[in-house]
Image (tube, rainbow, N blue to C red; front, side, top):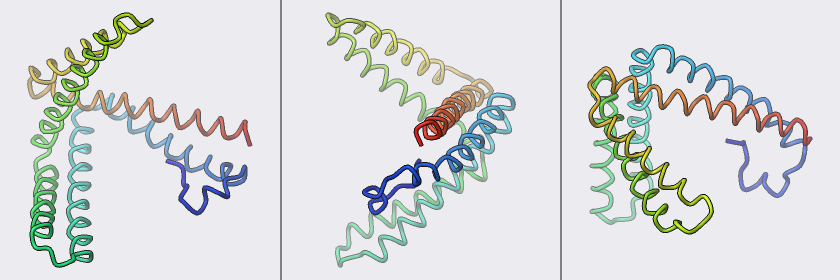
Length: 190
C-alpha cells in the first residue's frame, strides 16, 4: 500500500511518511466511492467487477508469457506450462469481460469455496482452543463462514450477484476506513 521499496526502507523518516498521506487518502476515497457503488447498484457493479477481474486475468497472462519468454533457460516443460497458463489466463479474462454473468458466477463459486475452507479451518481451530479464553469465538466465526458458503452455493443468479457485490462493497468500505485511519495516524505522528 505504501510506496516503499528496499532502497527507501533504511531511509524511512517522517518526511517520507508524510508524502504517503495524499496517496492513501486518494486510494481511500476511491475505495469508499467503489464500496458505496457496489452496495447501491449491485448489478452494474457486478458487470464492472467481472470486467475488472477479466482485465487483470488478461494482463496476468500477457505478463506471464512475457516474463517466461524473457527468462527461459532451455527447459522445455516449464516454458510449455507457462505458455499454457498464460493462454488460460487470457481466455478466462476474455470470458469474464465478454460475458460478465459467467464471471460473476465464477467469482461466487470461488468465494463460496473460500468461505467453506475458512469455516472448516476456524471450526478446527475452535475445537483446539476449547479451553482457552474466548476460543469459542473461532467456532462461532467458523459456523458463520459455513453459513455464508451455503448461502453462496444455494443462491440463485440474482442473489449470487448481490452477495458477491455486497461482500466486495463491504470489503472496500472497511479498506477505505483503514486507509483514512492510517493517513490520519501518519498526520498525527509526523
